[in-house]
Image 1 (cartoon, one colour):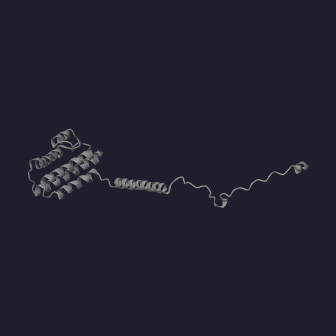
Image 2: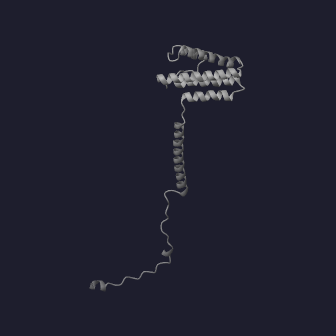
Image 3: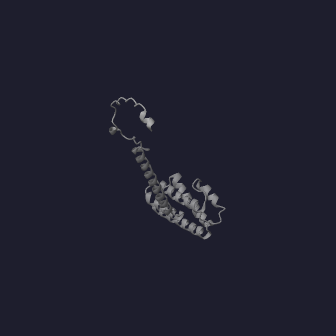
Length: 185
């Protein structure tokens, strides 16, 4: 210890120059991982996606509950044909024929909408579910409707009523056959 005391004193260092003071120094700048507009956009997309999911679920639930049987649809279309085309015979014939054909296609699985009346009637010849009187009546009605559609034959009010009643009767008979034999598709 004495040895340290005997050492000559170190020369004095000059004073430090004036520099920035430490009281004005700021800490590190925080850089966020995401900008505010990116967060708002992401939240908006998430809300939109959830809204679309809810909308599609509600829409599919509505569709599932509103399905009507081919029988009910055919009767409704037939009534619409009678109501909507009181002045237009050709439109009445087309709509009435479509209602009947779609019923047979949906209820019995018979291709009928893409065929002529003759082709459709020929496909029924081997059908044992629909008896001969049914097929004869169906042939007469389709022939009358075809004459109106293609030959512009006029239909009287009495004929319209007879056609609508006969078509309803045919659809009712076919529905009974379908329910009895369990051929509903």
